[in-house]
Length: 265
Image 1 (cartoon, helix red, strand yellow):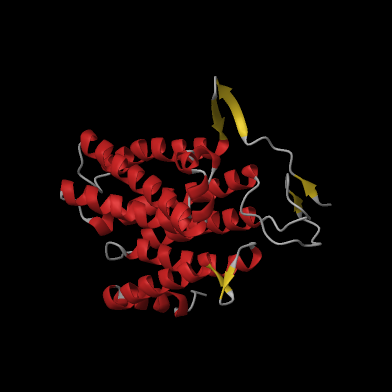
Image 2: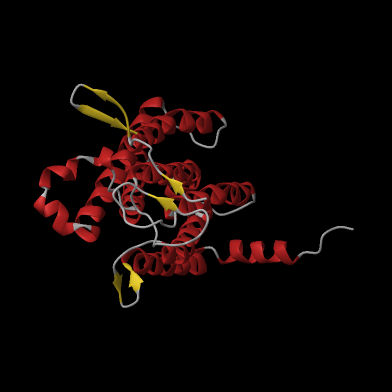
């Protein structure tokens, strides 16, 4: 049976301020980064002071917010935000582009690692796991907001979103599931012997392929037959594929060998 979404995206109000699920997801993601990095630090994987961790999380947060918002305002919806400039700062209502957040958090992490003298590849491997998980939760918040839906369909699991014509593919749930499935795969990769940065590079390849395929079930404007997200994913896959071949050839060979190795009888 088709589902009709009546979920209020506003959890509660603090005076004139709306506390939305979308904003809470981002807040929880950044707040959880501190205890996560402290836990990693205690295991001896990193050697950071508490101040180092706070600074790193700040750089990551700043990069994520600025990158995601700039990509959304300048690439996805420039005319809307130029007509409503104050909405640029209302990130709790949605409008954080994945590719922009991805670039932003990498740049923020790079800057923090540069300031603290930390190996960038190792830090990216460590932080990409919670990053992917909270991106999945963020897609659930997109579902609550009634945004990023798919095309009209007669599938039994289609969803009627508020103020949207027709029953739609719940693209947000497809995307959330993809990201949640990526987490255990990345954990398995992390537990294998690998060169620093390899897990992060594999994450980039997964995102490039997964986003490209899933966006056929997302309603977007097309440019030469593909959406902006798909063209961006082609670029992501090309960049990370080149990095993997150039710097992580032995890790890739190890993966292929382990898959081909016969199972013990």
